[in-house]
Length: 117
Length: 362
Picture 1 (cartoon, chains in turn purple, green):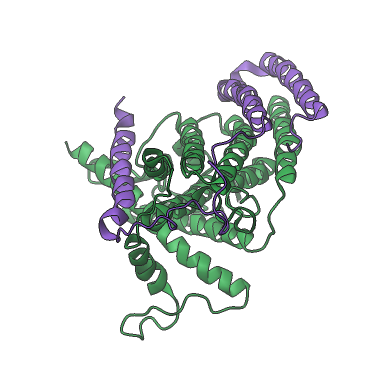
Picture 2 (tube, rainbow over the protein chains, first blue to last red):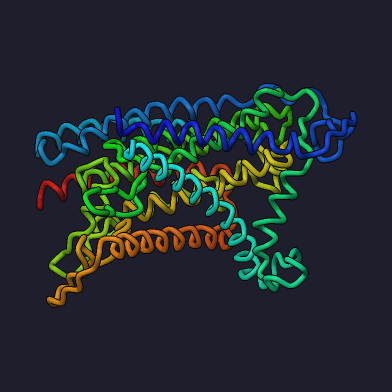
């Protein structure tokens, strides 16, 4: 675990730096409240209701597809590190795995899952 | 205790270097864009009205930060105050933590003590970097969500979709690099690039993995949300994207995050594809040229040469990214998704399998 000490140091120092930066203008800057100034900016018009409405489900789809392919990448990493020891066996195993995923990728593209909403 | 002091000093040094280089890049960006567009650029603020002429460095290193830090800390009406404040912190901490695993030199030998020129020598360095880079999406999406602003929300959603989409080709292009060097440790990858092909050519990663380099560069620019992939900010469409409702130091934090991401991409490209801290023909005890000349050098000089070479390479790739940012126009959203999912992902998968085949054959 000793090699992770710098990570901890960087986490603490980075957190301090970031917090100091964010609160710097709260201390150094002026604070003047005005109702019109604090409206969310919508190109000068009065905002029409809350911004937290519904948005297209296509964005969730991109996230779901990301999880599938990112896990694939996670599987590839240990294989890549020991590839030289695995030899032909490892190559064929991973070729089958990648081909199945490639079929999946072709399917989602043909289905139009990535078309803009 | 001495070991801890050295580790602490190295970590602080890396953090400060990254922060200061991030500030300096703001100047490079303003002046570089001015050079490209045949303008003069920032030239107003100067010490006593004269120094340093009109290079504008006083503007961006002193005047701009003072101005940003003394602006009002603005939170729009109806916004989620807690998340609005947390988002810049969540964005900044992971990018600051990323750079500590990148080696900036081999070792410095002082007496009996061998000091590695790298803050954290993790054996899973590359995975650590991917993990930290993917945490960057939270700052964007929380900043966009917490602002209670339609444009900010759109920017945040676009940012999350773009960043997670381009993480896959980024990871896949690095798989091919890992296969070539057989390690996830960045210091080992940098050391492996010190060998010579045929006794003459330095074995830098770009010679083995040119396709991976192009994919990684494209995905890296997309991950750092810069033109031509700056859809989350897209000032002509979304005002300022996910940081529309941010002002003062919080906005400065988001800007700093952008520039630090540029440095991270430059550092990774340097380490993985351009030999990291390697100077051609420079070994631990001096230059060993292929024609037989040997110039012995003390360890301190070797370390300085290596750190200097690493810095120059990183600065070159930072400059390259800034030139790309001011040369290319922005993509459309569907073009961005098509390039990622239909272009880069199949290409990087093919690159991985081709690398595997070539490693089997040779």
